[in-house]
Length: 450
Ligand code: BGC
Image (cartoon, rainbow, N blue to C red):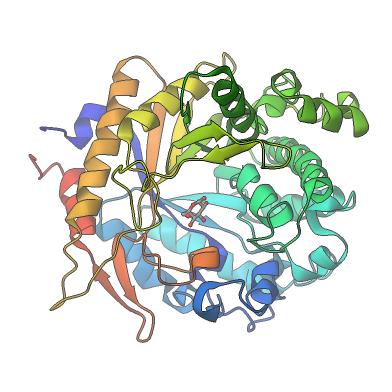
């Protein structure tokens, strides 16, 4: 395939994405307060091999060389997130000046190296003190989030113009408040739906604050998205797939577009809307984002299953369907990437789409100073081609960010799931650009004619 970066247009934006808890380290120093991931990782059996984010990639100390690596690879955008408890150790109230300074340094370094910072305000690391007050299930979280966003906007708004309010609201509300497999480890539908409501409010509140505080801001937020494929065309499988689509794809974007929650798709959502009087908040949940960030990792094949409470749906895994998959067991299916982009682009109010995360974990081996990750190169080629197809059909896709700069703390998977374009040796913190990183470098410099 003869795909070139310039096929995407001269103004197409290429970037690489990260998140604070996954890379920064320095979790207990320089005045930082604990986040829910610090405490969650101390709970038995929650994180593979009892790994924790205390040191992670030590980005806190190595940000200069890491930003230089972003540049070496040819990316023009560096996406990172602000650790709420680094600047507000208790989540609210007193400010940690050292934390504030740290992000000034990171932003200044980006600007000095000609890299545009894209700043995520919330990438899953709630301050532990706020979790004690109920976290995202508590009514008070919205006032705290407003104060946090206002502080960030006023502090960095002169230098940072590109913002992402929330990373994957469905991701952390479902994994952290319904299934209990991510921090803070809460479970059950009551917690989940309270968290959904407050997160949907925070998403729009955040956008409105940025609009008011930052001149010429380019404001986005991100959604995880997965094509939902019914296992068969039987009515029961079709309905099960529809329920999962409501949850995984529609739950957070539709309120922000002014459409309310997708209650017509599933009676459980209807009950949630009624019991929380959500009609009262419709306007507050609406915000006209400048761009919508989509993050795609896998499609899901869904089958009806009467034994699963509430959703009565079951995922038929890629492995059991004998489909190619990554080290996470996630199906490699670029066609589904194309399909889900089209699904989101079909909302009339979505003005422009940025792919704010896409990438894959494979079993990488560092041998004689090289990581030959051909599988990851193939993955990117397939997914970029699918994105180009959508773009060429007229979908307004303005940029793409690869996940992720370097191997990092992959949440409940600990350090074993490697998604990076750069290999990290977690003992020495030595970085080695993988072959996929070199491929990106070639691709972005137009040197590659593959
Ligand atoms: C998250 C990242 C995560 C990636 C791979 C996304 O859902 O935003 O933080 O590392 O998926 O699991």
